[in-house]
Amino acid sequence: MEKRIVMKIGGSVLYDKFLNINYELLDKVRDWYKESKEEYEKIVLIIGGGALSRDMQGRIKEDMDQEYLHNIGMTVTQTNAALLQGFLNDTDVFVPNTLGEAFEYLVEDGKKVLLSGGLKSGWSTDMDAAVFADIISVDRIFKLSDINYVYDKDPKEFEDAKPLKDISWGDYFSMFNITDGDVHKANGKIPIDVGCAQFSKNKDLSFVITGGESLYTKESIKDILTDGTFIHP
Image 1 (cartoon, one colour):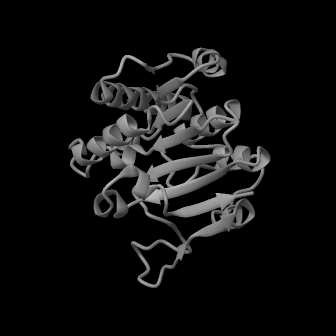
Image 2: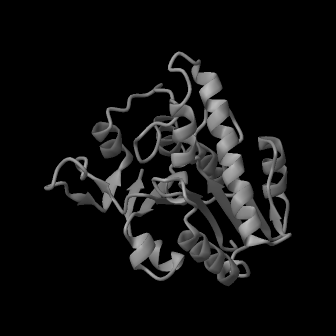
Image 3: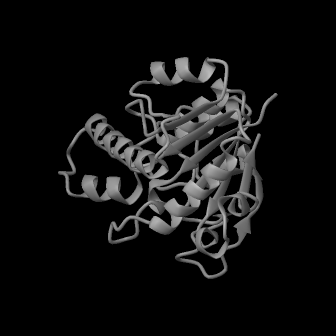
């Protein structure tokens, strides 16, 4: 099979805490894309909402229904996808408007580059990445996040928090108290949301969570993708 890759870029790393665009990261993504485009038959890049989405939703009344919060967050992810599309400046990049468009594009023969925000209300962009990985028969998704590893406890609160480099979905479910049937809530704050975690476990998909400081200490995206926490069946 030709090489294929699915990469989720968390919205948390697209902006700093003041919502300034992270051009250093965008430069690295663009450099990686230019270097890797011919290497892969299919490239799927999924963009999250992150800080911009949370900032917007934080200004909204707390009693707003989850469906509307999801729709707002999904719109932000699509804005972020448009930002990256403009930065890549390549007419070969396809940005779908619906899941149906994305599916039809990905199952076609030939080289494909898909760039997308969220496409289904109620899903996280992690879920979009996992579904697209399943469609193109990729069993490992790379996620660039604001953490370099999953830890056994919150490293912001506990100095003795230890990074976990290899864990099963069973371990992950136990760590974050996930049970079958749990539903994703807008702007959840765990590395892989509950819906995507369940889908990935059932589909035998794996995630590599990476990023954090390595986004700035390592020179290239290719180097960054060699490290992180491997979550697997």
